[in-house]
Length: 535
Image (cartoon, helix red, strand yellow):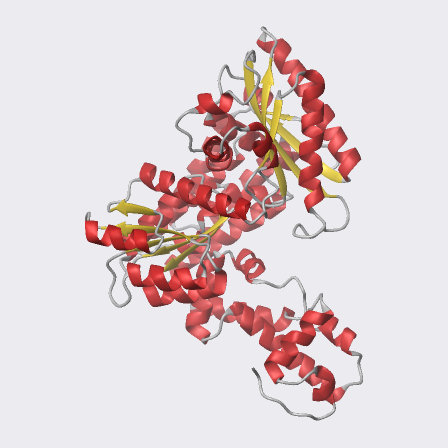
């Protein structure tokens, strides 16, 4: 998933672009905003966005100046320029600075989606050139040129593709039916660092998928890593039976066998969702597989069957969700926080009660309706939401329906209290600061955890915290840890390794480096009374 920064000094235009990104199904993990070039540079230094969209004409630092300076800080970042009119001279300058695309205002949703897809392709290409991407291993073997591989990634990860026939040609030519599978894997016991020891899970999963498919018909299952959270793989699948019911039966059995082998071989808990069968590949299959995957919340984690969109669609009663949305809408119109929260609880209860489709659609409908209601009250919450809530992709990060309910309740509560009481952001930031002060010893504490806990997008929270307190969140956490470490060194004989652990550091060597950077001496020298200067 991608971190995106939107820079424009006109708030309405900025919010329009943020909304279009959030509702485009483009895989976004952070959706950040900046109202000036100077503010954008601070965000770039702190968070290194993957993609930056910036207006060329801004007061103070203009878009071209920002692109030049931001490119020096984050040279791998994809930059898209936005302008109110076509200006060839500006476009030439932008190209010289490495800007990869140029959009005209008003930005159209389709053109924005295409530009983001192209930016993602450039990022993946650069990643491949550095030898860092194992995700495209299968595509490298199966596709004859880079452009075709990128179209496959765009189809699966971003949902944008003009010619699905080329993608379909990757599967056997005599295929009669096509299907898309989502595979979501979670470690059973210990957490594995994806950047070090966890890579074998995705590599092993892709190998198992290919082997199972080749045993039936060589090339009938094509696995590709899905852009998202955790260990997720998408499979393009082909079936050869003439009768749809025969193909459906065999594919479900194959998916069930795959789930069993993944759990047995890789030590994971696996959930597999499958779209309906169709005569040709289309992005509708990705939508169906995503919605079927949400039904996993009904089952025990250790006993999730193959989640078939077709089977659930046949028995899902959408009138229940329509009633929930009606109650939610009435609560918003009447300014009733308790009524809105009751609707959220009803949604969660329905998902616990029966394995039915509708969670993702209802979740996104609630968030978007809430966003529009806040806007009519003169309060914008797009920055607080982030694209992952607007698109519903945040559901992919949750393990239980209770997490979904808690997250949605926080969003609704924060938004409605804001418009009813016209609270400013100072109160929330003070809560964040106190939360850090109470928990800085926890190694898991991060901007992402804070954003999730307080229901604020990570980029917005980080920028607001820095603007209010004059220090980035990460540096504030480090400062509190260093102050605590200094106190322990002065007042106790506790070993350095234990102090590092008590201060929230998983790596002793990293603790030593950070301490010396802050105090100019090693912890041992500090304990002995030596003084230094921070570098």
